[in-house]
Amino acid sequence: MMDEQRVEVYFDSLRPDYPEYLNALEKEALRTEVPIIRRATRDVLRYLLKTKKPARVLEVGTAIGYSALFMRHCLPETSKITTIEKVEMRLVEARKNLERYDKTGQIELIEGDAVDVLQQLCEDGKTYDFIFMDAAKGQYIHFLPDVMRLLKVGGILISDNVLQDGDIIESHYAVERRNRTIYKRMREYLYELKHNEHLMTSIVPIGDGATLSVKIKE
Ligand code: SAM
Image (cartoon, rainbow, N blue to C red; front, side, top):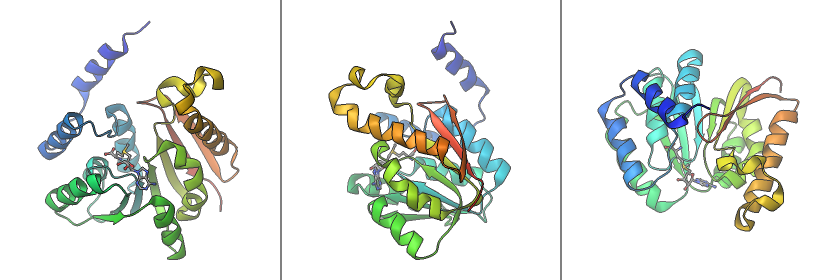
């Protein structure tokens, strides 16, 4: 059996150096216990962004702006990122960090509940080449219909934290009662991603689990 922590330390030693502001934000997120994208998931995101160079990126769940700034770092200056956050405490930090570090003005922060914002974006006829879903896990299944409208054919949808620290493979009864609703909704979400005829999806056990989907038809 591999020692996963040692593997992580080894992988860390191979990772590229990121700009100091990203390292500082990562430390700040750790210190204040704000959940941000894990390093292994970042590797995959970076690979996809560098390969596909999407012109329009949508993120659901900004937190303090770490992943939006990370994606900006991986993208050409011509790409635009729209990111959605609803919690005021997080928004205060996100506004500050984006103002300070998004010197090229590539990131647009939309303040509000993604349920409403996604609907509004659909009504406005917006479309995206790349969508990063990283908000409340129990809501992914509710966001999906609008996300499908917003995603272009050939576009990529990444959903983070789908394994729920391993709960997802357990039987309903083995999951703590307070986590059962999220568990049920995430299972529905994964089933839908794997069976939706408009998508082709891989579930990959990186970080806390992520799905990589591509929209194959309208
Ligand atoms: N993507 C961020 C990063 O890696 O730096 C981390 C995002 S954190 C895991 C999830 C964020 O989604 C939280 O800040 C939470 O407030 C926000 N969120 C959850 N549900 C939301 C909703 N319905 N609308 C907008 N934001 C939401």
